[in-house]
Structure formats: structure tokens, C-alpha cells
Length: 224
Image (cartoon, rainbow, N blue to C red; front, side, top):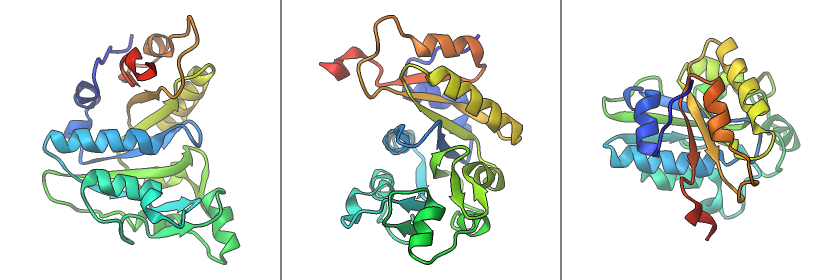
């Protein structure tokens, strides 16, 4: 039986993330709200006294207004300037990163993406790494998000859109994370539309997962 976590701060503590030195944020799919959730996590971590080091190793669909990019949102939440350390590889085409890189004559390698993340940082600092797409989505010419996560070895936070069908996606991805010998810290359900009547993915997932699951937002006023 899973644990009921009533707030994001409590979820961070229950999941063990507060005791970790960083996390790798992945999704069940692209467009599930990893960055939105990441911003909330970073804000909460900072309130709890952590200095966050944001990393988005690669981003495709890069906008002319870089301030509107995912990397910029993570940097702003962390209180740092968006620069090449935060997101060293970015491409215009809104495609999987290796496809987007192809269009600009570049090649992405997993080891190069991993090297964009620090290997040592001071006590009190927290490394927040966001992948691109889902856990098994291609992120480089020679590997998947799963491969990058495995090299980094950080606890994994799984984000899913709270919608019909997400239980299957969450459980499959959770199993894939474990098969890579990585620790699944927990699951965050991102509520993007009012839930269907009778649907309760939070309660259902708590029956199948030992890791803590939380839904964000936490109350119906989000739809008011």
C-alpha cells in the first residue's frame, strides 16, 4: 500500500529527496509537465534551504525568446542566470533531440550530455536534472533518457499527466526505472484538466506502488 502525501513538501521528505544530493526528473511521455513540476520542486527545495543547481542538458523546440524555454524556467526558479551551463545543447526543431540535432548538423552523445552535470557540489547544494521526453525517449544519437539517468545515478522523479490511461504508463515506466538499477523516489501526477468523474489515479497508484505518489495541484480550486 502506498503512502498518502498531502503536500509537495511532505512528499519531498517522504520520498527521501530532501536527503539526496539531487534528482533526475523524467516523464511517462513528452508534454506531461516535467518543467512545470520541476519549477515547483525547485521553489519548494529553496524554501527548505537548498541551493539548487539546474540542468537541462538538451532542449529541442528552442524558442527565439530564450526566456520562455524550459531551461530558462528552471534557471529562474533556481535564482540563477540562464547560460550554457544550464542548457549547453539546444535546437530549433521541436523533435526528439537527436533528430533536431541532425537538422543543424550536430551529433549528440550520452557521455557529453552527462558531462554537462557537475560530479561534485557543496553540502546544501542540490542538482536538479531534467531529461527530454519520456524515460525511454531518445535523448542522444547513442542513447535514451534512461541511459543518461543511469550514468548520473540520481534518484528518479517520475512525472505523469493525471489522465485516463496514466496508470499503465506510470507502472511501466516505474518498472523500467527499477530495471536500470535506479531508485524511483516517487511519482508526481500533474493535473492539467479537470479530472473525469469517478477517476482517482492517485488512490489507484497507491495500491500498486511502494513509492510515494502525490497529485499537483492539491485542491479543486485550481479549476475555479
